[in-house]
Structure formats: C-alpha cells, structure tokens
Image (cartoon, rainbow, N blue to C red; front, top):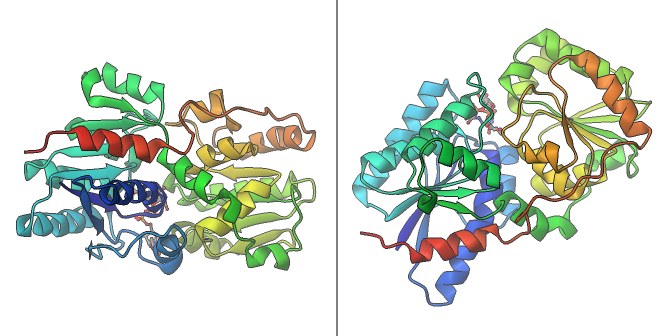
Length: 364
Ligand code: UD1
C-alpha cells in the first residue's frame, strides 16, 4: 500500500513528522505500508521549510512541485498541476492531507478526480468564518474526504452535522501534540534569548500572520503599540512571518523593548513559547501548543476553529480590538490566568492511532 503524504506549508511539516515515523515503524514491523512524501513548495524558505525538515527528522521529499508564492488561484493551480502529473505517472492507494492550507485542498481535489481516496488529518474543525482562506480549504477538503481523522469530539460532531457517516470519522487526537511531546525536552535556546538578555517568564512572545490582522497597516501598528504600552516593561519578542515582514518594514516601529526576528525554527520557537509569560498570537496551532505547555495565550481573532483551547486550555479569544489587550495582559501579570487542562487524546499517540486505522482499510 502506497500513501501520498502531502505537505506544503510550515504547520503541515509539524503534523506529518509523527505520521511518517509511525508508518516507518509499521513497515519495519513487516506491515505492507509505504509512502511518497509530496512537498508542494508552498513554503520554500529555509526558515519556513528546510529547518523543519532537519529538526523534525522528516526525510527528503520524493517530489517537490516548487509551487511557491502567488495569489490563491496561482498557488492552487500550480499545486494541482504538479500533483496531477505525479498521479498520472504513478498512482498511489491513498492521499493523506493534513490541516487547512492551500496545499491540503488542492491535492485532495486532484486525488479524488483521479479516483484515489482521501484521508484528512485534522478534519472537521470550523471557524464558521468564510473570510479565512483556511475555512474554505477545510470545507472543500472535508466535502471530498473519505477517511476523517479528528483532533476533538467537537470536530467529529461538526462532521456528523454535515452528514458524514460516523463510520468514516475517527477521533484520534492531535498529531501536532505528538511532535510537541516528542521534542519537548530538546527545545533550543535561540540567539535572541542572549541578545535580549531574556529570563524565564519575563517576556512576551508575539506572532501575527493572518491577512485580516497584518494586511491593514493601521491595525498591525495599533496592536504593537498597545502591547508595548501594556507590557509591564517586559521585552516583546516578535518572530516575523514573511507576510507580516513586508508590512512591518513600512511601519518602521522602533522601541528598545521590541525585538523583531526572522521566523524561528520549531525547536527555537517552542523554547520561547514554553518559557514566555504570555503568548499573543493569531495562529491556531500555537494555541494548541500553549494549551499543552500550560502557557497563557491571548488570541487576536474573533473566532476559533479550536474551541477546546479556550474551553479547556489556556487560550482566550479577545477579538481584534487592540484596546482589549490591556485588561487581559493585566490579568496575566497579576497571575490570575486560568491554569487549563489538556484535551482528551492529546497524548502523543495520535499518529500511531491513524496508522493503525490506515492498515485496516481495504484498498482497491
Ligand atoms: C499559510 C497558510 C496558513 C498558515 C501559514 C503558516 C494558506 C491559505 N494559509 O499562510 O493557514 O497558518 O501558512 O505559516 O495556505 N513567503 C515567503 N517564504 C516562504 C513562504 C511564504 O517569503 O517560504 C511569503 C510569500 O511572499 C507569500 C507570503 O509569504 O506570498 C504568504 O505565503 P502563503 O503560503 O501564501 O500563505 P501564508 O500567509 O504563509
């Protein structure tokens, strides 16, 4: 049985690493399972892609479509074209996609049109916010998926509400947490730790990359100014995604408290996340990681497709009004933040569960 594992953007790499390890383990145990690693090239910089392959010990991809940057349609088209060519040359038995990025949706469509079943890892989560490209990717992908692997019971329920049969839904837990648990003892102190003379629980970690937050200069400027004003004098460490970087350069904000860095590697970023007083973000994946590491997290969005990080974990969704930040940051500084607990099956064994199910499928 040959499985195509699709990865294109930074969060995908974190999710496929444990699945590949579990497949390799099964193959070593004599099971009939192998894979082709398909890199779409949606992310291509060393610090958005290469460093993740090295640190997470992901093998060299079988193919790379080098789809690169572009509009949503340009990216989707380039990825679909690349994957179709691969499948026309040699079919696989299953296409496994993870998450909600453009590569996820593009390859799922090509697979189904080539009569190859699709497995979606992290299926069923919904923000109900149609302005996000990721929500469209999720809905399109789940509308053509055959095997749904979910991180939470609420994601499984979302799928049932949309008419997916319970037989197709497998609640397996969270592969992002498989990676986190495996590497937690190996996080690496980044250079910025020394440059900014950081100490544990004495800085704020900031990440922002959603178009809704960073494509409007005034909003990005107001967020940063408000965080600096309400930061209780702590340094603010801001590893900047390439999308944000373009806009940030125009703003030219200078403050002795603000430390702007390139995107960090997985092990470096999570070193900073684990030891931060608070993380402020608009990422979804980071809210899952901070929940497991029990670090206070403030999300600058109006909705989340990961409600458990708020209901069970350490995350608070505060909307997109910068004026709201002060009240929440004060709560952190007064040590009144909720402690949170870890959602069911976020235990480091999700990939194993997925591969055990994949082994039972009867492929044509
Ligand atoms: C994508 C995902 C988003 C995910 C994020 C993580 C979609 C729709 N969005 O958003 O869900 O949270 O990845 O990082 O798939 N760029 C580089 N180098 C790179 C990659 C990108 O310079 O290696 C720049 C390019 O100018 C590009 C821009 O970043 O145009 C945005 O990249 P893109 O892949 O379109 O979306 P992201 O914002 O990264």
